[in-house]
Image (cartoon, rainbow, N blue to C red):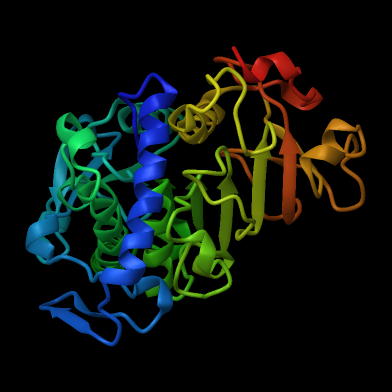
Length: 369
């Protein structure tokens, strides 16, 4: 979920309460169990898995997913790619011999958000990449924030519909990837999907569609509501089977999924709350994963993270060594060859967030200011 316009905890608390209430209502009053919907060129979606009992994806026409390509030749002006139109790819600046980065927004988001542009610019500043922004705002933004306080029921239902739409968008990303491979020789192993919140789960669905062939998926605080309950059910959420390398940054345990499901799971400041965020402002905590990752792309400072089973042990100084399993770097330069498992580190309260190899735990007061 993305709430870039939220500056206080009141909105976040309202949203969390609404989503929880919605799930309770759905359990009793909404069910599509045993049903299926099929769309031309995209395929069918069923409700076999328990995580899909309550809704099915909307149609491709309703969601209207768009893919905007940026390259070193067109860093500021996008070109639209269409997996159903070969000429849109052939006549573009997409090159199969480059690495390809997909950036996927989450609930109540779109690809025009400032953080998406900042991440795109950072990536193009360090490498010769194809950067594709995935815009599925029609399927991800299903309620009016102006009326949210009088729309208690539709808010959580809107999230649940968006959660199912992520399945279709993930498949569309996979279909575009297939077309890029066929027309340009691009390798799945050179494709890196970066998604925030519901966008991270969308990346997981794309990876599942391609049977885990993507080189890397980075989940930036993957959405938790409607997913974490089914963390042991393959096909319900982003996990290590969805790409050759899956790295996840956990920054909020309410809007995000706190469970370790990747090859490398990073828990800055414990992964529940973030230093510098106002207490109970889950949106601030949730969005910090974006800023940590974007900073990591261009900074010379390393977000060094230590293998550690819990935040309590980290605070007690029991994880101040890389040990036999080895440390890893959180963010863009995370590397599967270093180690697997769960990692902890501290950050600064504001930008620059990186503390370097010290990774010292934050002070208690930092969680309040």
